[in-house]
Length: 233
Image 1 (cartoon, rainbow, N blue to C red):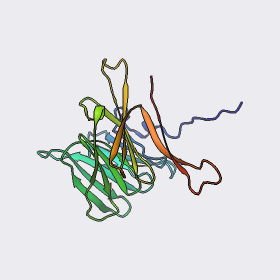
Image 2: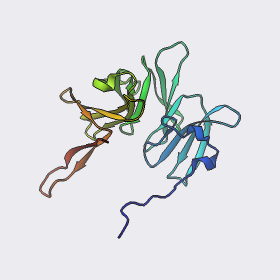
Image 3: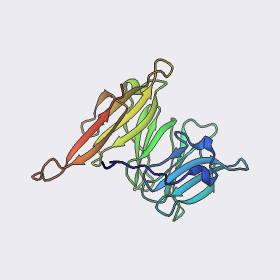
Image 4: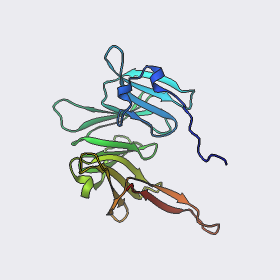
């Protein structure tokens, strides 16, 4: 019987001198199969960002940077950096094109950014403590646009945002978070499904979800939009 899925090691980050303490949620990010980005500490104690290009023979590039977190673009050599400015509330975000050395955007958020995700190659999603924003970097000198406010369990303290997804048509958003009420014995999953067209939301229980497009039959002129999610009992 054929095995439907095979798993193989592509790269061992520890072999490239990256600290094991950096292998954690938020410090190591992978937005696609092209780049891995790690917020690491060099042997001399200085802060550095390590970028692995998996489409270029796992080439490793290390740069000294004091950012709190980094996020590589899923398809282009573009990096987003997040840091805290002393004496200023919220996070400071900068986006650079590493090939052209051009600065694509700068933004000082008024609240902390607890999760971020590249929605497209030019739109960066920012999940803050209260609200969710989309930043269109295709537009020069743009600022993030507020899309919706976190609600229900996803607005409560102690809830950790673990995922944010948007469909290809940019009409539906899904925010996912986890929390616990018994010191970690069980992990609750909660979702906020939001329609950008109707400005309405639905709260769901679930731990993972995403959108897709599937052609239901040969007579359909266009694929049907799908939403799938799962809850771990």
